[in-house]
Image (cartoon, rainbow, N blue to C red):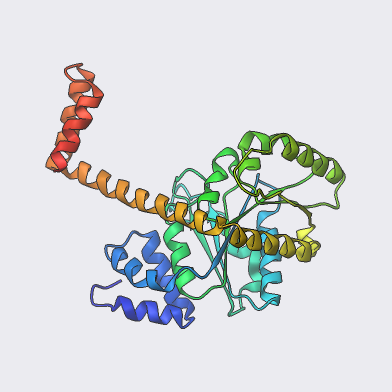
Length: 320
């Protein structure tokens, strides 16, 4: 974005529903543009209205197909929907490798839908580092629901819970998903379980195993707890969409009734502020004397002239 471009104008155009303006803002976020701070400041007053739903699960369970099905069902309810499909990074271009938009072509011409593939660029946790700010862009642009589909990378996918109001965990029969679920800790983060490809053999076994594990892993928490429903779907045929919408609606009502929505959004803001502060600190530390201060301390630690804690104290003191 050229320095002369009016940030407020760009935000206004995005709020008017202009897809190019929304795409431009998302590009500024992904590129960590120097004027990103101005963009976020202009967006923030218009946020806080969208419902954020995360979809995660092991590879091959049909996350993109399920996202497309859910997207269609939400559109039938008249909701404007934004989709952030988080893809592995290309090792050559750094861009999104899978291009989930290709799998959602049926929604490509719908003016009430905006789909963006984002590269993780090596960020662990199944989410791109820019995802929190991208959610802010779509929220400010007036989308009612934001779907975040994460990379299927197993145990590191659980970061989606830090961003979503509701987290859906997708499993499928015949893939050893029960064991995978337990290992990945998804029982801890799931608000709604979806057993996709439920027309296949083994679906009943997968559901039974899930029910057993949910019962065994119930955590004692203060106040009313949410019992995760298990929804059967065949996303490729649109089967189970209504049941899934019902489960999501019931969870939204539970979140509001028990104050959990506010708690989750406060936790999301806390994590975002900490991430921005740490990123800034790393930049400032790297800039101390052109980075020489850190390297000098590193060498002293290796030479055992100073211990790591003392080195860290000295480095932090240099910031002030």
